[in-house]
Length: 575
Image 1 (cartoon, rainbow, N blue to C red):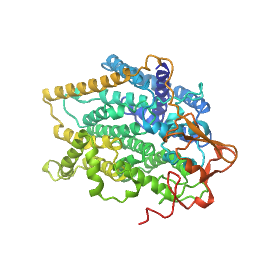
Image 2: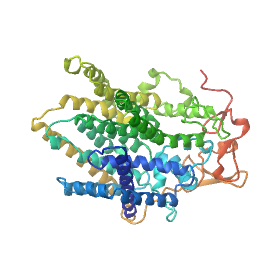
Image 3: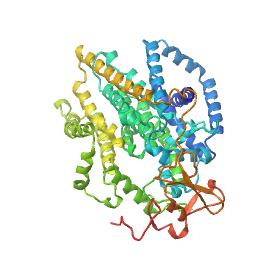
Image 4: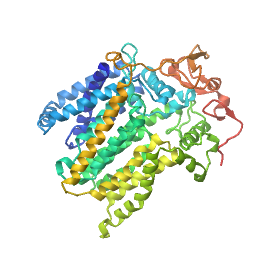
């Protein structure tokens, strides 16, 4: 646990300083440090991705980051001092610090259980290991197709893994994000200050509901991508509504949230519909002919997306995986287009509950009843609530209050939420991919219905309900962490990744690759690995070392190669 707390302290310092500096350069800062921290995580992720293009994300990356932070402290020392001076004078600051400290301790307990997410030992750990050892290598998607998923979050994990210290790779970033987002949700509730109901508070309640969900908190101790992606969606919508409620007209705030939306897309492609929010500040900047400011934010978005896109091309040969339709680059390590289609349809089939890629063309009538029947009751209720409130929320935006005046901000938020749900349902409706999306529209509808109510009883009821929810969820976290027999033994020792029995395979050139002796998980330590031995007969090294990467053998580059290494006789996905 002590190692976790030290790691979190370093993440806090570096994220806050980089976020503070960049947002100062971009324009006015909003009050509070939450946006500085979230923006800082974005900057650090971009930094780690850029670094990975040239060198392994290891000790050198940490030293350089420390130097950058030192420069920021010197350059912005006066602004930093004034900010923290004001911060420490705020009301209830002592109790807020105590609350955050309690969250830190409880979340630290959760991490003593070690990684519990199945996908961590399937490909998360291997993805991080590649970044730690080589930064990026061409065509590693040919070795293990899931490495081509290339979430930018894995670069952030590698930046704070400290694997160069006794060879121990840490996975504490999700724990830090959970503390940050839950602290934001609990400590920034506006109804306690304003004594009335505001809509943005309902998004914060959504954050609490998501983080206190059993499927979420059991994965906090793993380096998975879902937690950051989903909390970013909720956070961005919450802050967007927050600025709108405060009557903020400056495009700076909204544009910065749009940059975070681009960041969320690089973490998990399924969040891409958040980028629709960019329409509002873009139109305002164009109407105001603020071309310089518009160019700054467009450039900022490109700077966030470009390292991720470059890594996509290096790993898979395609600018966005798994979409072979976007075939732009002619490189020798390009994965077969059929492999991408196979992976895409398999992801969809598993999400739909069919578990058979060859049923990729199943109609809604076939998969929906099966999928819906497997949902937990809470997800069924949420889905029903979305169906019920959706028409009303659209009509509310079209005829606001019966006046015939359209509320474009309202319609934009509803459209973004509906688009996120639609992409989830069409792409892969696995519950853990979309539980956060299903929370948003019913909570937004509740906020719209109760907005502005000032009766003393209602805010008190809301305060009690939020407090009860938080206490229940956090106490469940604590109980889950205390159940582990490991927490007492690992106060000073970090729980390592699980170890698996693997078989060795020596490729041409003397390079050893591992495959699991049973199942498809190889974990972190047997590196590099692939779950499917059959793939080894289809690929070859591009050079003399792993740094040169892998490519398909010439006879298979245009073949119908499945993700498992089988060579199909025909294109099963031809229309």
